[in-house]
Image (cartoon, rainbow, N blue to C red; front, side, top):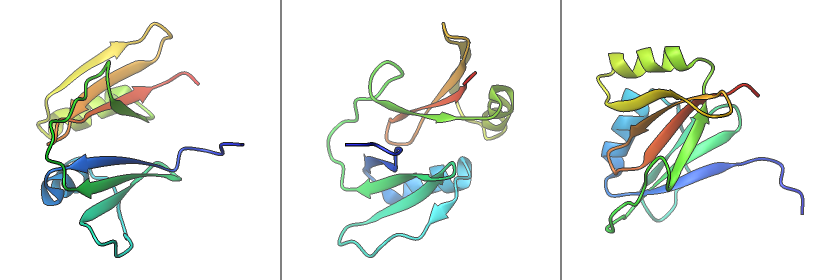
Length: 122
């Protein structure tokens, strides 16, 4: 088996409208057309070829943290990302330098999922 790339990350949310507001209006991710599934959701572009899929129906507690379940997005500049998040009024941790020299900031979405923004040297 040859894996070509990560296609998408799917997260199970309690309220699609709240998630769409966060990812589209606050983080300003591009919303994509979504097939007519028999359940509510939304899709967003992450970079050139990857996507975030929002799936409605979560009733259990989310277990997510920087050292547990989270997803990471590579950014061009951690300083620009920090400035962007501050201007949006978001609470976040970092920036913090990793042992490998990369930089990271973590923000939490409305459902409690941790999102890492990373400036990497590779």
